[in-house]
Image 1 (tube, rainbow over the protein chains, first blue to last red):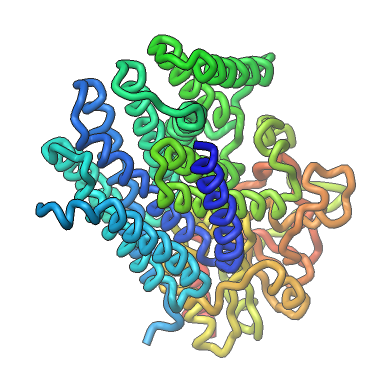
Image 2: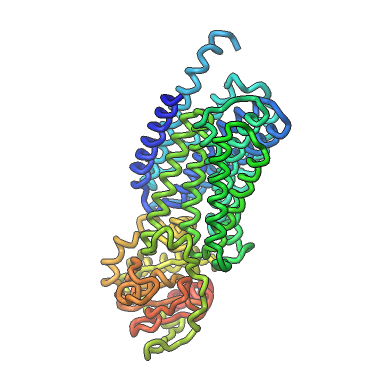
Length: 95
Length: 472
């Protein structure tokens, strides 16, 4: 168990470093799309929500899980779509 | 599904997750330039699709009915929101998305706890600790984001709301939540009542956390909640032993933290000061006067301002929240194009905290078809401002107050500002002489080279456009 935790901790810390490195290079101009886009990525909790929603079990549990799936889906669909809407507006010059 | 494929799933799913995580990282990397950003967003979406599709093959999933219900409801809401939101309302949208992300993490953790409390499983100590952390972070992010949304939307007051002893109450609730969480882990058996209490405390904490923060500090709050929603996801990853969740949550957590730091630096305030000082709760402490330090303001007519702009060779526009409020971005662009047609060099100077979220002004100007090479960051444009003929300030206030450079007694002293006062002439568009968020007078308005153009920004810009068209 401790070994599993340690590996997870390694993954977490290294991912933070990657995140800091990659995101520091995003220009101020794109900070709003960065926020909505990273929001969409945090919708990855949908993966967990799907498994708990599909496992079956108590009614309460299922209700919680369905709400979780819906919330996460809003995040994913809304996040990626609105980010694309913004990004397609950034143009060099109208021709 | 045949047995052979079924047997490979425990390897295939994590491998697909690895690909998804890589796509997220590459997607974020492509956000480093407006040229590749859209492609980056598609890569992220592709990674997400892959992750979702693979997850549906998961051996533990026995029923798809409820999954489909959740997906359809969420998908429709997300689609409608993303399609219809106005660019000026983007801070509210992001606040809501943060909230849903945090809420989802708390719910997933809650579902695991429910199984545990009902004797359906026996989680490790680590899983239990991270369940508590997901619930606290996720719950707090959920209600905190809703309050931030309410403030931005004008449903909840934009002012910093405080009451005597508010900090003590918040700290006690936080300690209570952590205490209950720790006790539940030590207890090592399910206790639903205490667990629900923990949830309630987390939800209350979110409200108390955001309520004392003023409207103009919302960029920091949204960035921080963004980070929390990521971290809550990471914690849920520890609970479910899922590396994809851990990695994605860490990426988002890092992104939110970086943005939070950038925002704080741009205001020369510590995060603690933004969160706890109730900055701006004394707005209107200064009266709307038109004399200051023995100087009076000079106003200008749209006609005269139009002539000034027409004969300039270099003009810099400085957009602020006032431009967003009066939806004037299209008029700004129209005026800029008119001037460019007359051979004037035009740029836009964007302060990092202008607007209600990081990058807010850039999105609005991009929406109005301003070419992005004209959007210049503060450090880059400041040396240029000395050589600028006319700087036009549109609904910005504290971020152009020269007191930040020299007045050690000013609450905004040390904050990096746009040095518009160094331009030959400054035209300030403003509704009235009311002070800005910091509640202080802006000496820029009283400078000899400043001309005030009073009125709604959109109306003033429309008048300016007429003046420039008719003038020369």
